[in-house]
Length: 630
Image (cartoon, rainbow, N blue to C red):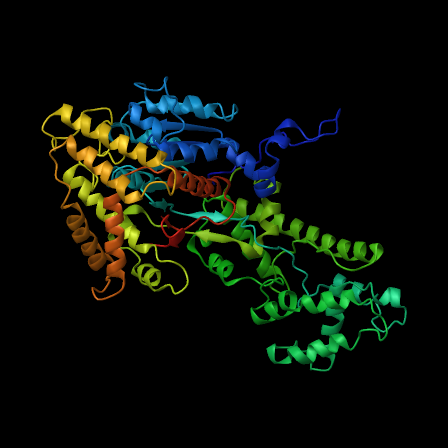
């Protein structure tokens, strides 16, 4: 089991100091995010080691949003040199000091000022060359984020990480790229079992599957009492349980179904005390019918102790059947859960023990709470026995931390398993249904056309050594040449190529510094193209036509999009925008995408919440984001 022995949580410094009785400085510093992912998530974050490939404005924004919440360390891999134009789009470069220095080193220096507890380091090598000579370097990280790198590099990196086998931990890869107002993020992840998915509520009152102690407690309350104080403080779970028992007594032991909703509601209201205006507890009982009665009855008990279909599928998974010493904690816990459910008289999940607020006397609420809590502790103890037996049968050494087991039991009905696809799989055998649904969405703005356009950019760059609409070798999609090196053979001389690069970067800077609404974006684009064209002999006028041909080939061959569909017009518009943007780096796009990528990275690091699977497309023109499983 890969994570046994290291899973127990590290000290989080979140304890209360004895002298001041105040939270520690660590807890106060991270107070907001501790409310989101708790000390367990923060510990995972502080142990993480992140690799970011490519020193750019976008990678700076991503790292900013990872450094602030306190990742353990990061390495920024790039050998690019800072010039004057870079300062206009990257706010983590310092005018007057950063010019002529390595961008990775300068960014690390300034990012380190945001959180002194994060270890920042730069590796000044060409990413493609390093991958070829030392692929093992990339395996020692919690997560790898590749920013605006070439398709060939990302494909090679994805395949290398995908090939990792236990006991080596898997390393997820996030591929991120942006151009103008458009951006895309893709996740390559072999498998991720998520325990803390953070559902809206984990309350399980077992109304339809009451255990004996709960039934005994219900008998202590009298719905027919004339005491208004006593009657108005009967907890709503007790009302529902007693009414279900009453219903079953007159219906041959059967529970109500969907056709009996009105009749059961009348049965509840019949016990309201006439003349008593204080019947909030009965109002709560009526409000709870949907979640705690009708939903479990309609879904084989799901939400009320029953096993959801997704968890049932995990029980039948080969990874659950064939445990080994290299199995992850997630699969060992799922196997133990399967044994627990099989041993349960009602085939139920372990009780979480959570009880919501409700109208009741303090004494009555405490009694109810103690009944649920006692049963939850009994279930937890029994589940731990199954965990121990499962570890023993699988020859697993070590022990799973109690905190992890308790979190698993609490979220047993809300587990999530993601089995992703590699970049090679997404490229060679993409999900055509995702494309069809993306173009047919009647509610949300369509963004899938941008994935096709970005996919067309890859072969264009490989053929021409430059981004469409740009008259020099693109520094952000380098296929192996240092960004500080002279531009490619598409220019007549290295001096002309460098002049074109400076002109292009200057245009990108001018575009980013122009206040929104003051200058028409098309006029800025014309200036950008004119500046580049003045220093280069490369003709970009045919780029749009060539890129459109590549995009249409991908749309037809990979996604079977009909030529007479509405998708063609959207693809044409997307191609026009990519060529018009000319690989521009716009601060609004990089800032937003930096937050999105960091958010997904934190989900992967903490193994909490549900990450996007597996492609996220941002359209800044429509202000829309689409998520597709390709």
